[in-house]
Image (cartoon, rainbow, N blue to C red; front, side, top):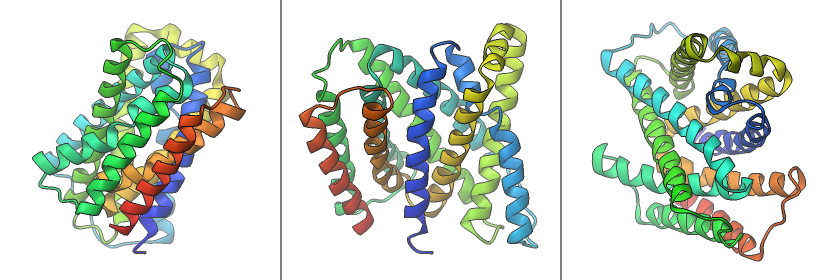
Length: 296
C-alpha cells in the first residue's frame, strides 16, 4: 500500500490525457461551459456507483461527519476546478493541443509554493528539485513548437488554469484530511470525490438550465463524446483524489506530469501534430523528475 499512490497517479494521468483529447474535440461544437459540464454530467452517477461498490466490498462501521470547514474546502475546490477547466478549454483555442496542456502544468510548482507557504506543507530537497525540474521540462515541451502564435493572453490563461488546478488539488487534500473518522484514505477520497462532483454538477446544471439551454442541447447532440469526456474525467479524478489523500499534492502532481507523455503521443497519433526535438528532452526530464519525487 505504501506505493499505491503511484498507481493511482499513473491511472489519473493516463485518463486525464484522454479526457483532454476528447474535450478538445467537444469544444469544436460545444461552448466552454458545456465542455466543463461534460466532465461532470455522467461523473455524478459514476461516483455514486463507486462509493456504493466501495462500501459493499470494503465495509466500515465508521459514520462519516462533514464539518463546516469540510464544505468550505469542497465549495472552493469545486469552483476552482470549474474555472480551471474553462480556462483549459480556452487555452486549447489559443495554442495547439500539446502546448495547451503544457502551459497548464505549472500546477505542480504553484501547488508546492502555496502548500508550503499557506498550508504548512513540507517537501524534502529531492522533492523540491523534482518539482522544479518538472516545471523546466514543461517549459522545454512548450518551446518545442517555438511559441508559434504565442501571446501574453496565452500565458495568462495557462498560468491561471494551473493556479486554479493547484488550489483545487490542495483543498481536495485538506478536505480528505478532515475525514479522520474513516479508516482508509480510499474511503476518505471517495466521499470528497462524490461531494465535489455533486456540487459542481448541480451548480452547472442550474446555471446552464437558466442561462444557456442551447448548450445542453448541443451536448445532447454529441452524447457519445460527452460520455467519453465524463468517464475519462471521473477516472482521472478518482486517481488524483485518492493519490492526494495519501501523499503531498506537489509530489503527486510532479509524478502526474507523465500525463504530458500521454498527451504528446495522443497529439501525434490522434491529432496528427508533429513533435519537435526539444520535446524529447522535455520528456526525458519529466521522467527524471518523476523518479526524484518517488525517491523523495
